[in-house]
Length: 308
Image (cartoon, one colour):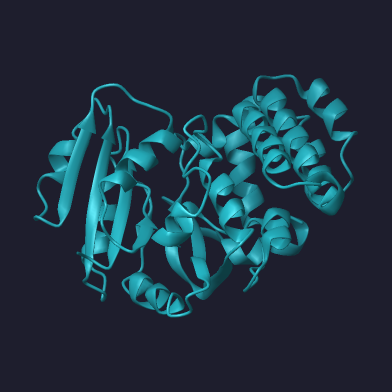
């Protein structure tokens, strides 16, 4: 049994798939397997995966399912005590697994992450920890407030995942990772590597930037789940309730701007506590929605103090 099972969920990811695979094979830590779950791809993704050795176990479905459910199906096929996740357009630095596995020598650590370089074809745009400083220990509230974990940087103790009422929520496709991270953080310690060992590729087809309306729905879904799971959540974590509600409103505003309704976007922004980020977006909302990708790249290049 390998120490680490690497979960790679894929849907039409052939463009950058070799980069992702090669970054795993370059790891200085070698005790791993890859569970490659092809979620109904119509391109050559499975063919590319099959070109690697026996450590890649390939599973394929003809019909796609929500990403949360696809992650669960892949995990069911895995055997490692630690689970790492690599989205197929992202990459790892060679020491990523070696550094993170050490964190789990503490039996109370359920989740670890690394700093992440956000990049595109032109180069590095920013780093995750520049805008969301991480914390160690029992940091449930802090994680929701700042959310510093990128999916491809995450490593989870299997025991921590199995302690949850459910693994990934099969109804979620965009925020399924945040939902799991929050629920693990409620009862387990978090740790992190303060170095950029993960690369998050941003490009025109990222679902992260195409579905802000659905982001808003899923953010509220997570909030309602937390309120169901934990008694008196709305009283104990009143600040978190406000934060997630405003976060969903911001995501809804972004979706309105994307479809050309800048006026409605600005109405929603007026209902959110002011910040530099909100002011920047208010200015951006006067531009056509077609400028979203260009302006979002400029946003990533701004100094971190201007994006809070």
